[in-house]
Length: 171
Image 1 (cartoon, rainbow, N blue to C red):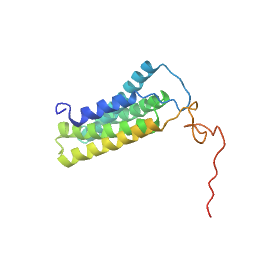
Image 2 (cartoon, one colour):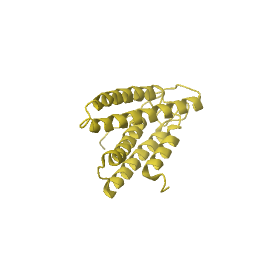
Image 3 (cartoon, rainbow, N blue to C red):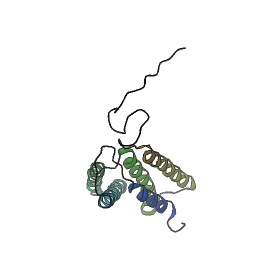
Image 4 (tube, helix red, strand yellow):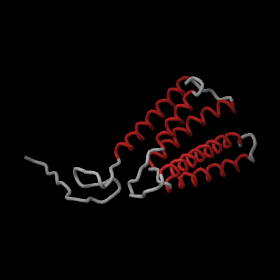
């Protein structure tokens, strides 16, 4: 655990969660291939965004690095769109991408540029990662297939499939 640190724990937890099959739009896919594809695309999106962010800082000293910043950001958003098209929900995708990006950028800027990395920053990264895990686990437990019984006949991402209860106020 100490060898991998916070980053290793986040990557391992994120990789396990990427493997969850979300089919809220009733799109059935071959699970293994698409899970691996989503994981690779998301990792590539994270790394290109971190590279772009670090190049932005480096561009202050070497202006030619601004070209890498633009390329990194554009590539990252294209890869994110591909992850979403592959079926990973936006909340989960953005949560993993954002939290991992913050952690890697803070660690990278400390290693490359000598910026401080304090225990409070480490705690912040842990808290962000914990928040993302809550969102991901909540999303994984919150999806229902239309074939499953739903108390109100509503499936995630779909229209009501049965009567909608009406709640009235008053006595």
